[in-house]
Amino acid sequence: MSSRTVIRGGLVITASDELHADVLIEDTRIAAIAATGTPAAEAWTAERTIDATGKYVIPGGVDAHTHMELPFGGTFASDTFETGTRAAAWGGTTTIIDFAVQSVGRSLREGLDAWNAKADGKCAIDYGFHMIVSDVNQDTLKEMDLLVEEGVTSFKQFMAYPGVFYSDDGQILRAMQRSAENGGLIMMHAENGIAIDVLVEQALARGETDPRYHGEVRKALLEAEATHRAIKLAQVAGAPLYVVHVSATEAVAELARARDEGLNVFGETCPQYLFLSTDNLAEPDFEGAKYVCSTPLRPKEHQAALWRGLRTNDLQVVSTDHCPFCFVGQKELGRGDFSKIPNGLPGVENRMDLLHQAVVDGHISRRRWIEIACATPARMFGLYPKKGTIAPGADADVVVYDPHAEQIMSAETHHMNVDYSAYEGRRTTGRVETVLSRGEDVITDRKFTGRAGHGSYTPRSTCQYLL
Image (cartoon, one colour):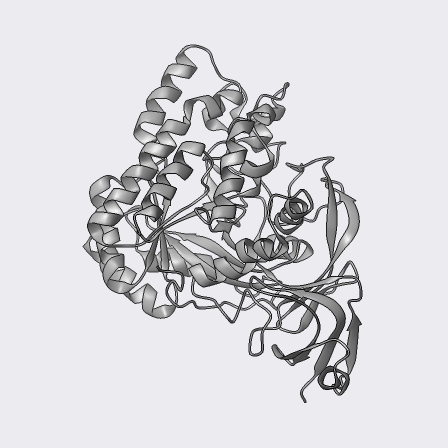
C-alpha cells in the first residue's frame, strides 16, 4: 500500500528557487511540487496533510563531516550513531557522512567493516562513509579503487597528528594520483603537524599548559602553508582536493588563489569558526578546554574572511566536524597539558539553526543557506539529487522550519550526548518543527517520533561538483 502526504502552504526553499508551493510525497520520494492554490495542487489527495503556512519547507540538511564514536586521545567521541543521528534530526539534518578509520598496519576494508558494524541498525537518519587513510601502501591504493566502486568515494588524509593519522607528502601524492584515476575525492586536514609538534613541545617546556595555548601553537600560517602544499600536490597529481574545516584568513586566500587559477579545489568551514573564537579558548578555570578542536578557533577577525568566502563560493560547504567529548572525564584529561585535551566540539544539532541565524544577520541569503548546508554537500559527495533538494524523484527528506521561533541553545535542552553546549546561552531565531526522512516522520511537531534503524546506509557516486 502506498502512502501519500501533502505539505501545504509553506515557502519551499532550495539552492536555486523560493516558491510558495505545496509538496506531494508518495511513500519515500517527492512526487510533485505545485504552486499553492493552483488547480494542480488543489487536486491532490493524501492520507495526511501538514500545514506549513508561515513556515519554510526545506531539504533535510546534509552534514558531510561527523565523527561518531571516534577513538581519540585514549577515549571515544561521546555520541554513538544512535544518539548522534537522533540529535542531527532534531537539528534538521537528515543525512550524515561519517569517517571510517583505517588503523596503521590494517586494511581499509577492516576499518570500513568496523564502522558499518557501529552504525548498522542504530541510525535515525541516512548515512554514508568517507574513509580515513592512515597507511598508504600498494595494498591500500588498490583498495581505494574497490571502495570507489562500492560507493565510498572520498578519502581523508592528515598533514597533522604525526604518529596517529599523519601522511607525509609522498604518501599524499600517491593517494592523490590514485584518486585522479579512480574518481575519488581526497579530503585534507591541512595543518603542518611536524612544525606544530615542535611548538607544542616548546610551549609546554615554558609552562604554557592552559587550553588557550592549543590555539596559539596551531598557527594560522601553518594551516595556510599546509593548504598551499596540499593544493600543489593535488595539482601535480591532477586530482581534485577538498580541504576540511578551514579556519584562517590565510588558508581561505590559498583556496581563492587556486580557484582563480581554475583548479578543482574546494573548501569547507564549520559553525565553530564562524561563531566562536580564541576568546572562548581563553575562558578561565579550564572552561576553554570545551572549545579545543583542530584546526583551532581563531581570533574573531578571521570570521569576516570566512563569511566572505562563503558568499564568493571560495568556500562551498559548512559541515560540523561533530566530534563531542564530555567536559567531565574527557576534556579534563588535558588538565595541566593542553596537548592531552581531546580535540573536538559538539555541533551536529546546531548547524542548520546557526546558519539560519546567519541569514537573519545578513551574512548569507536563504538560498545560500540551503546551498552550503544541503545541496552542495550532496553534490560534492555524490548524493545529489537524491539528497539535498526538494524536487520530484528526490528522497522525501524534508524539514518544516519555523523562521520566527526563538530559542536559547543550551546543554539542558539539546539532544547530543555531551555535558556542555559550545553555544550555551546563545539566542537564535528559527527552529525545526517537523522532519521527514524518506517520507517517515522523525521529528513531529517538536517531538522525536523516529527510531533507531530507520536510517539507511547510502552508497555515493563520485563528486558532482568538479569544474
